[in-house]
Image (cartoon, rainbow, N blue to C red; front, side):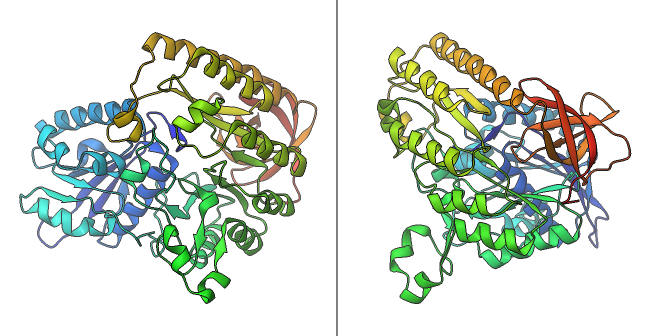
Length: 481
């Protein structure tokens, strides 16, 4: 399941010069997972080729695009509320056009045009290159829709425009779609089948980011461990590839090596991993390169074999434990985070206790935890009764969160008294006098500013902590600076 950022919001407006209208402005909002934020940067780049530029004022917009998420009902509810806000603005500016992008657009298609009277354009995740044509359609007074899923599109030829960038960290998309068909998840239906991006285009993008001053990249995909480049096409068609294609193919471990060696001072992260697809060679590659961060987001969703089977997760509790043991043995200081769903259909109290006991075994550094939300069109919605009372879901979720907070504090305390290399990303949200950055384990670190700057690698002596944040004092630049 995708790592979800609830009610996350980025806005930018884009300016288009035309012969007849003068400057036009486009405002983009992004919700949901990191992939959606990365896609919005692709959209901005495509529109930049048409003369667009960026600003951030919704009220000035002639065209509003909202990049949406369908992973949970709450995400879609948030988008609908934003559409109400856009409608209020449009009353004072009737010429303003509104488009819905992303997973919600793919899932609901023409329903959005019918129910949300404000929506003029609906564009799925594989159709962004068609945006210039679609914009001309709505300029001519017609509604425009393109939600066709692609077997080839990876946007590997698009250099993203970095929206609201901190100039230090960036996302780089490496795969699109997913083949895993978890019963609770809409991603295979909204983003299509799995295909990987040309590794040379990935290395080129990472190198260009380094040349432009960026110091850290996160390689993105619904399931990065399934990365497999054999010349293009769907992963499911790999067996039909020629022997030459197979012999020269690149898997995720190989891609990590290519990126790490191409830019040995660039920090590298990746998300999201799938337990059934993470192999030992990936873990060993992480251990072999100091610039690959010691952090793995490893969603499990449940600690019960019965529920894992109902979810079609294709791994067991024991197999997950074996993977954790391999990670701990090869990378002892590796941080691990989780996704967890409380109250999946058929979940008994014992199943819930199995989840809590799994958490006790792993003791995750942090996690992303949700009550089950039925998504129309998924196998779970079609075949399984949503039979867990809402109050039971909330109680189980609360118990999962409380246990995770306990483990998070345990993990952050292990850093106290040690010195960590921290990449400064910007000013702390809570104090203008402190910098904020992250260590290799992806834990937030705050410390007094002194003379350091964003983008600096600094050694920080950790003096205190909360369950989510390390607090310390810089003791000098790191060797990587």
